[in-house]
Image 1 (tube, rainbow, N blue to C red):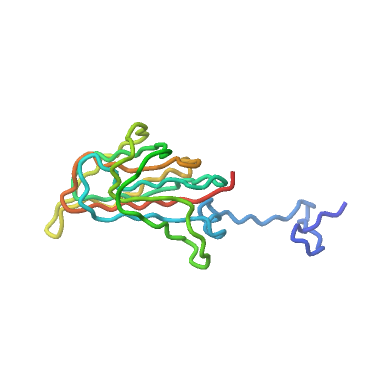
Image 2: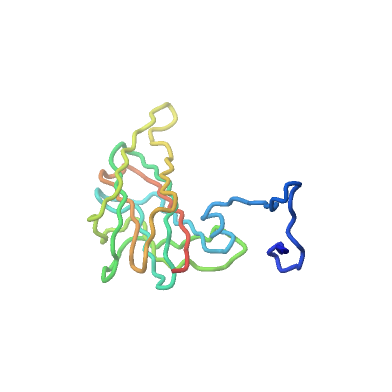
Length: 188
């Protein structure tokens, strides 16, 4: 029996001295693979006059043919306090705030993210809080702020059409915050 190399070249696959199939595996993350395909994006919201309980950033999937997978995010603010991570349905909502365009992570592709995103968003509900993060301040002679913190979801958050991921601040930042969401699309 011949086993071909799987590349369509017609070459046979190799074996070692014990006749075991020789393989070479390249391990890449799902977000890396999506980036290679042009389907990975980042949404970034920075410093706004955000009020208590407002949504720092909200990313809503607008695609009916692809699911949006939230891989990880970064958050930082200038106050100590609670930050809630939420999931919500944006069907029928008139969302408000500053529009954010998803930045494609593969700069050789020109695809536009099939998503709507806002900074300082005020109309989305906070009904499904699935994670709460307590931010602490670093205080030194140069600055009074919190460190940038990575929150890793390992691609566990999957959003269908009109489903959204958001980050709410429970206290009002004094001067600023930053929140960046990294996600990618998979065909349904």
